[in-house]
Length: 172
Image 1 (cartoon, rainbow, N blue to C red):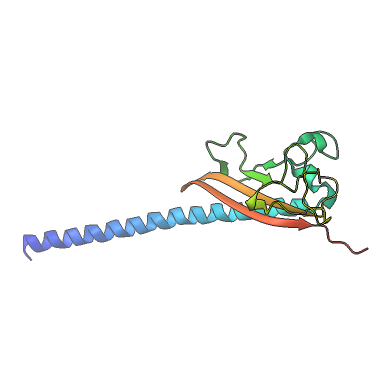
Image 2 (image 1 turned 90 degrees about the vertical axis):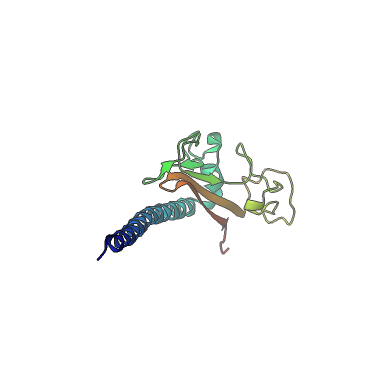
């Protein structure tokens, strides 16, 4: 073999080793991203399950951003922010928590005339066949909810959202 043939073989071998290393590194990053996604999905599901495990008429008060309306006294509810073990809050996150529960309204007032496409509003929340500006926190029959998780992951800032509509379904 000539020196040129040896050099060509070394170049080809170097390229193959480089591609193999790149593939292994990408697989490692993807495995971490998949693990983070699984943790986020499970945390969002668990937050919605927490809402199912309290009396329906207290869900809004327990999970909104207003601590003064908590049924057990101010600050006794779950609140609208939560931490998730295994995920780190994004660097620009003000409260330092990964999870957030998004409900219609603000300051303990549940409104159905709010313009919010993500929550499907405006919408009749209390079943009176009207969408008005009144506070529905005491008589809602359906409650749109979004659980959002935002974290600093291996592939940068990541976000996952799960939306649902909680409803009071009972036989009388």
